[in-house]
Structures are given as C-alpha cells and as structure tokens.
Length: 420
Picture 1 (tube, rainbow, N blue to C red):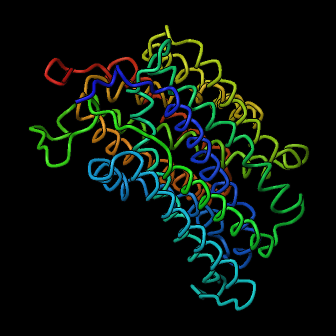
Picture 2: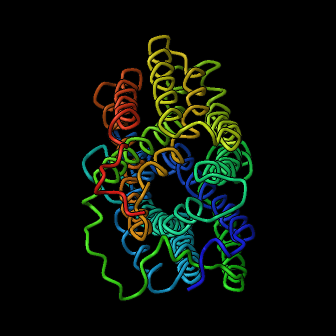
C-alpha cells in the first residue's frame, strides 16, 4: 500500500480548494434567494412570510443529515473522484428542478390556499425540493473535501491552515454571492421570477463541465483516513465523545453563521432608512469579513484550534449583543470576521485522532450542518411571533456560548478515543 507521505498532494489540494469555492457559491446564493423569493412568490402568504422564507435555507441544510452518510459510503465504494463526480451530477439535477420551478411560475402558475389570507404558489414548494437536492450534492462534496484538507500532507502546512485556505476560497464565493443575486441575476431591481430562467441553465452547464474535468483528474484517496471497502471497523463512530460534541458544535456554528449572514438583511430592512438601503451590502461585507478572517487564519497555523475557537466565540457573542442592544446591524457585519475560522477549528478538533474513522467522522459532522437550516428557521418563527427581529439575536448569542464550551472543554479527546 502506498504511504500517503510519498504522494505529492499539492495538485489535489488545489483541486479541493477550487471545489470549495463552488460549495460556498451555491450555499450562499440559495440563502440570498430568501428575500427576493419572499417578494416574488410569498406576497400572499399572510403573517407567515418570514417563516416560509426561511424554509429555503432549511430545506438546503436538511440535506446534510440525509446525505452525510450517503457521501461517506460513496467514498468507501467509489473513492474521492468517483464520489465528487456523482455529487456534481446530483447538483445538475437539483439545478434543473430549480429551472422547473421557475418555468411553472412564469408560464402556468398554480397556488395552494392554506386559509383565507394565505396563498402559496406550487412553484415555491418545487423550489424547496431543488434546494434540498443541490444541498445534498454540496453535502457529499464536503464529505470528501474536509477530511482531505485535514489529512493531505502538503509540505509546510498544518491541518487548520489547509482548512483555512480552503475556507478562504469558500469565502470568496460567499462574498460574491449576495452581489451576484442582487445585481447579476436581478439587475439591482425588484425581484422578478423570470430573471431566474437563464441563470439556472447556465449554472447547470458550468457544473456539467466541472464534472467532466474532475472525472479526468488524478485524485488519490488518503488510505490512512478512509476505511477500505469491506473493512469492518470495530467501534461506532458515535462512541467518540469529542466527535459527538463536535457535531453539536458544527450544528450551532453553521446555524449562527447562516442566521447572521441571511437574516441581517431582514433585520436591516426592518430598521429602515439607510440600514434598509445598505442591507445587501451588509450581507456581502459579512461574508467578506469571513474571507478576510480565513486569509488571516491561513497564516496563524501555530495558534492552537482551541485558542482560536475560544477567542472568536467570545468576540462574536459580544458583537451580537451589542448590535441588538444598539439596533445597529453594522455591528453584526463584524461577526463574520470571527466566524471565519470557526469551521476549520471545530472540524480539526472533532476529527483529531480518528485515524481510519476520519471519513465516517466527516460524514457524521455533515449531520450537524443541518443547524444552518434549523436555527435561521427558528429565528424566523421567533421574529413572526414577537413581530420583529430585534430580540431574536439572543438566540444566536446563546449558540456562541456552546461554542465557547466546546473550545474550552468538550473538544478534548479521551485517551480511548485516540486512534493514531
């Protein structure tokens, strides 16, 4: 068996960084469709507009627990390259479902009545299915990308540093996302559903080309981080305490990351005035702050992940509480800088010492990503119940407190959980 240290992983590492860009791009533009589709499709949804709107993000992240295990099994049977190609083909199917949703609404709109004041187009529910499918494709891609970044041996880099570099690529995409939706797709104007017809077809073609390229690449599987087909590992992946708590930490982290990046737009529009006018810019700057933070993170490999997570969770909680108390969403923009390096820190802590359980651990961690759908949804319901977004940020700040606990205590592996 070839030792992973004898393989030059620089080229495959670059490939993974590029694929991480597409993960961030599709995840972010799906979130950015919330407000435009609320305007275009949910104008007759009565008092549950905010709740229904957040289902666009919820359906996306619901795919993580559904597809995380599937992705881990595909890695065992198909290897990294085969799994990525299959994931990209699933993504194309999801984009075509998006296209079907748009065409139905444009050429033959049909709605469902849920009461005297609530009417929702069928196209909206088809769009949710598309979100789930594309989200599933992204889930499988991350099952490959994240453990690869942690375990590939690229000279002069650490696991957290490689994850930060991949995260920086991801953040370039999430920074572009809000502006792409607002100004490229909708041309800076009010949301019109027919504006989506061409973009979804173009994106499907781009992903088809990407799948063809990946299929021709040399992408070795890291044997030390992956069980071989037919190999039975003696322990359940859920017996590793630091991994289980890491799944919970990822749940809260992705939840707060998405909640701030998405719902800051609704919060700013509620406050009105200059805040409302700058809402899309705030979202873009939030994700831009994550880009800056991840670029910085790629140069602080000597700072332990525990310390990184401790500092950033405290700073994020302080900014959230201050932004809520002062009714100033610009303070929430700053949270992006501190959220930026949480993913690599949590991920590296959660899979530390797992050895051949690493791919299974990555699949398990993907289950926690469903928090990106649940927490913004709960925040949206909270906003509908209390009639505004102001106090809903207490929920997000509470999630940061758990991340602080994981950094300080929960991430420490027990002796019996070290497999290497």
